[in-house]
Length: 374
Image 1 (cartoon, rainbow, N blue to C red):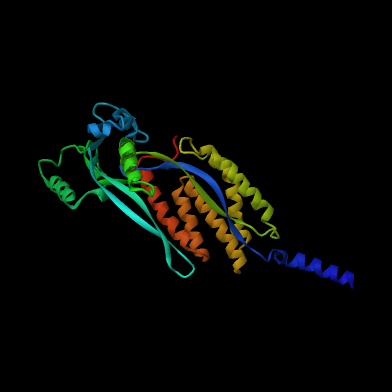
Image 2: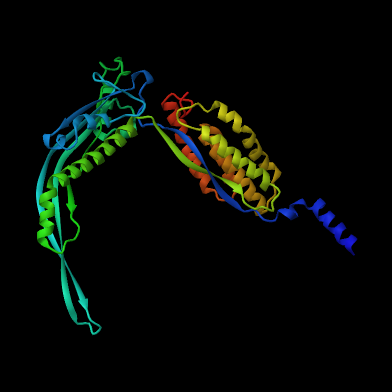
């Protein structure tokens, strides 16, 4: 009988090798990736300069030095110059004014077991409010048609149709206001609760200058974040570091489990070299054996059942993501199409097709082969 069971086990393992691979669980395994965020507008590399014009009221300058504000305005990938910049950033901080103070009282009651009020305690807070005025403008050459207003598009068409301007050069478009905005109008400060209104007022009187300075510092800091984000969204080449993930087999009984663990460990190690400031040619060569392995899984698990379908899904997904991060939009799109045809969780494929098309357009627009500095 023992020989019979041994023979049966041998036959099952030989004829039906997938019997021992019944379970296919996938899990997300994260790794780091770095690249440049490409801006909406293209500026030739030899003309990537920016200048800052700062207009600062005495009330702001007394709390936040102008030199410090000036240095904290930046454009990634651009050199600061004093004259004739390709991109101009104009920032104005107006006067700070005290508007009003408000006192609020909160009454806390204590009751006995019968619900009768036995004592009352009043707690006081004072809120002081200051008004601010400020704005900014980003000036530069604009080529992105999507960003043009209806009036600007009409004007451009009118000039294009002018017979006397058709031969004129348009290689160096004039600067215009790309974007602008206003900073928050009002900021406030509220004290902690005091049992005495006199104590609350005394705190405001003794700390009025510190409160004002702190509010101005917050106002300026928040404003500079907004200015830098807007300027870099339009023109800056901003390095970023992200966390990405691949779908890796998490079923220890599956025969692919050991090699998949090696694969994700290799990717985690190799991806440490994927930064915005280094080329990725060598990284692409080093990671190719892992990608070849994922490629083999598509044909190795070609069955129609859900287990094989999930294995193919992970292969398509992983290749799609890696090709996208290696700035190969065509290959990433091809893998996305394969993922959709595979039929298991197609939304990721549809999403990456759109992202790949956009990446291809942006690389062409910025005359770059990669989002990693060469």
